[in-house]
Image 1 (tube, rainbow, N blue to C red):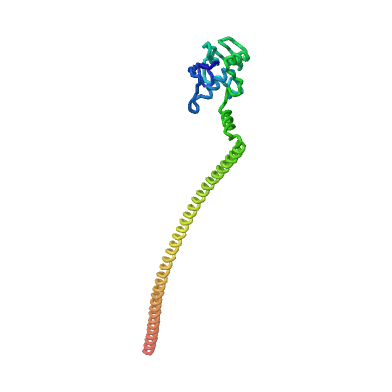
Image 2: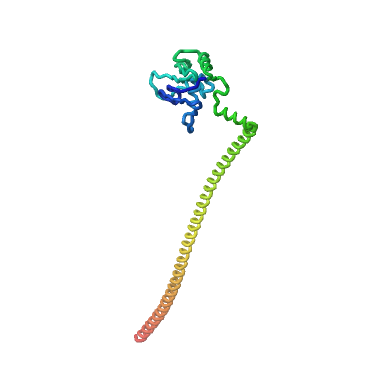
Length: 275
């Protein structure tokens, strides 16, 4: 029974240039690592070189498996794996190459063979790539575990509840977004109300100051009015006194004129009698 003892990749997916990976001599080998470490790329490389069809390689075409970075002009893609016979210990080199036209060639010990001859050689080493359990992806493994555990019976209900949960999340997101919008609008309205209250307070203060100014002017105008009235009364009284004095002087003047006139007449009579 054959087993894989190593893998050599050349410009395969994320592997620039040539990369060699040994699997050791253990009967059971695991490839482990954190997310993003390249476990699936390694699985794709093993699957590709063992003749797995493109549909199972997470790619639309073979060109997708070629390293996309900058490489030498004459670089080609030549990933291959070696398998050792458990009885004789002979090593058989398996090689699958992607050509420039996007097709692949198969080689056994650097000899070109057909895809059928390639798979028959693998079958001779008890490597059955067409067996359903030969390549089990994580998704298929999850389905298998769900079937064994009985959780597959609740898959439909789970999907329904999952959809309801997603819809609830969408509704909650919309409600949260609406709430955030309302909070923003409420804050804006509160700010506007504070500005309005401040404006009204300043406006009332302005009206109060204008009222005080008018009262101040009225007070001083009234005070000035009373002073003018008092001055007018005082002047009127002074004028009355002057007018009374003038009237008295006029009366005295008239009397004096009358006396002078009478004296003149008497003098004329006396002079007439003497003559």
